[in-house]
Length: 213
Image 1 (cartoon, rainbow, N blue to C red):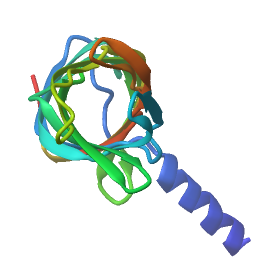
Image 2: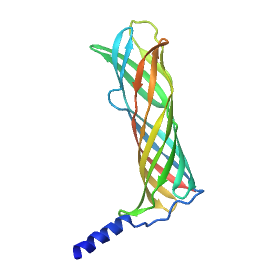
Image 3: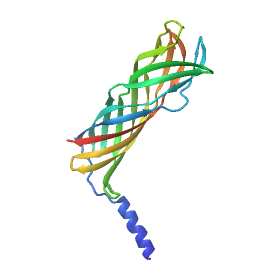
Image 4: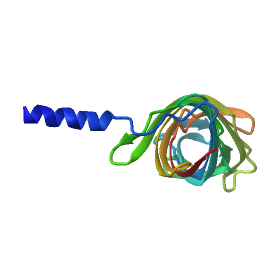
């Protein structure tokens, strides 16, 4: 009987709502930083110089997001950032070609914020799903002794998922930890010729300060 009571009390403590819902009409602004961590094996491109395996490295940059709650606990969020910079390595046997690009990944999501739970503080987990639009620019490729080459990466539209945790430390202020998955695939061209698809599809990890109004 004591064991059953302990289990019931524990389950109640873990599921008991200890904070009110975020009311409709609330705005939040989050400022922080995110690390874009591309998936491994970013594809293969075929060029006049041969087939090359693609490797895209990660980068961290400041980010900002705004969210408006259209219903209790339900918000629409837009994520923005300053341009991310990525080094790209194309490798075939002993031959390596270096390239670079910058990108902006604005992401619009619909999110649900769960009421706070005592674990042991009033944390507020949330989940979201939306769409990511990534635009690439300032692409550069370096091929020694091979003349001028122009690299172009097409813009990308894909699904984005979002999970996170807000940890309040004041009535209208929180610390946020979050992770996003972004489906980012881009068609690459070299001197106007299509050479294949580059699959970046990163996980994006971040922290932020959140203020509600």
